[in-house]
Amino acid sequence: MTQITILRTGLANLASVTAAFSRLGADIVVADDADTISGATRLVVPGVGAYGEAMNRLGAAGLVSPLRDRIAEGRPTLGICLGLQIFGTGSDESPGVSGLGCVSAMTTGFDVTLTSPQMGWNRVTPTDNAVLCESGYAYFANSFRFERIPAGWAGATANYGGPMVAALERGAVLGCQFHPELSGAYGEGLLARWMEAEPC
Image 1 (cartoon, rainbow, N blue to C red):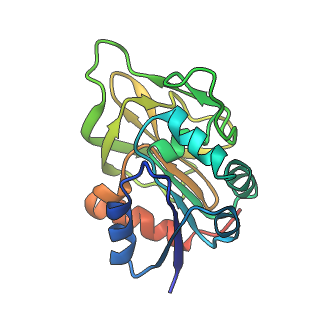
Image 2: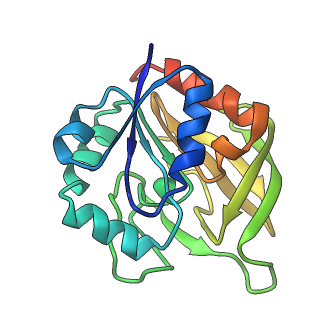
């Protein structure tokens, strides 16, 4: 049985993420201490809430370095929504607050002509070099996004008033701007593939 450690952030929709992995037969641990997060075989970083608050909580818990190290090392890590955004360098949502810096990009808000947050289903189109991401429809609930896939990463895009990053992947590190745990069969398939992914 695959063990999945879910990071308790205090901001996440923990119940739906836990339920999604339970349906896949995972053995689930919920934790927020540095030793467990650092040693986790497979770690999920869920996220709902504000960028600055999330980074402050991680800093106060001593989790910034363990998270940064495991992503840099390519260890199996999944970031969901805000959990993906904190992989980057920062966000327009919280000026002056640094992210983990594992992705060379900042998240930006949508054009003022668009309804924000984006709420609902949107088409996901993988890049040619994507391994985990497939074409399909996923459920989004986001006000901020990466505008383009940075060098060194594969993934998938979506369109909401223009192109945006739907997911980033590199080996067993995966970040989804959408919510795979709310995306039906499409999301379940992606989570199952990530559970089998090996570090590059």
